Image (tube, rainbow, N blue to C red; front, side, top):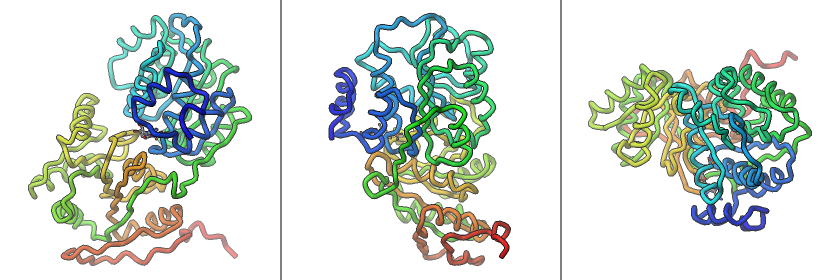
Length: 396
Ligand code: AMP
């Protein structure tokens, strides 16, 4: 199947051809016709499946009319959990709309609002925003929603995880009742469903099953380790396996700084991003990581949300995340759009329950590899699929 059969017009097809996309991904095949039909949509699709283009391409098609944009008005709103994702989605819009006359802007907190306000004076067709900054602009009346046609909630599960529910509700209250709603989420949890119930009407539901054709090729494996041994183990793996690149997830910003210095002591140059660093520093480090100037990037979960590093070879869960969804999201940073990738997790005994929960969700155990020279004192028990923690077991 080619993009030309999906009902997109020439300028959009040309932009897609410029990007050398050979054919639409599964989510694109399914979502584009639904969006073009004007229906509401709920789509279960992870990052890496091509989900951004699956809503941006038809959105551009629908907005490409001669309708005149009034000042302080917007026609489409894309809400994202993080500034990084907002920037990334807006840059995709720029690429896909390069032969169209549509305007777009990313709008997020933590930076001066004056340029955003300035751009809004003449109206903007598509705004990609984090919820807080968007509400702020609406409160200041520099932005009105009365001409809004489409609302997109991108990575809805993450927005809820990050506590944006009140802001999202307040935003939805301000939107015109007549609008098209699109919701994308890696996981369709009960919370996502209840948000969808309030915001979305009679949606078409699509879920991109993680079968062998759509699943990114990610080699997942783990090493069991004692907690105190992790930095030595990581250095060993980097050197012994000749790793050229890794995004390394860690729990705390203090831990991130410490790990960078431990790696440096072993002759491995690394950098860290976490909530404590300014936006400008984070952007600089990220762009150096993308271009290969930095090979090893240590990131806290929050700082790394929404990152698109393109062809990322490998993610390392230096600390295994508490939430299964976080694991799924993290490994989705690698193996994107057909490229193969690797996800390596360090698991210590106190991660056992989390490990079981992750493996139960995956539906298989993760391959355990032993590394010579790193014996484990506190042994991690053999995994149990469909493990139910004691406090959740039903009494018989
Ligand atoms: P996303 O899931 O939206 O984050 O997209 C993941 C990556 O896949 C991005 O780098 C896109 O540029 C790329 N991509 C999107 N659609 C296609 C396609 N049809 N063919 C090849 N790459 C694609």
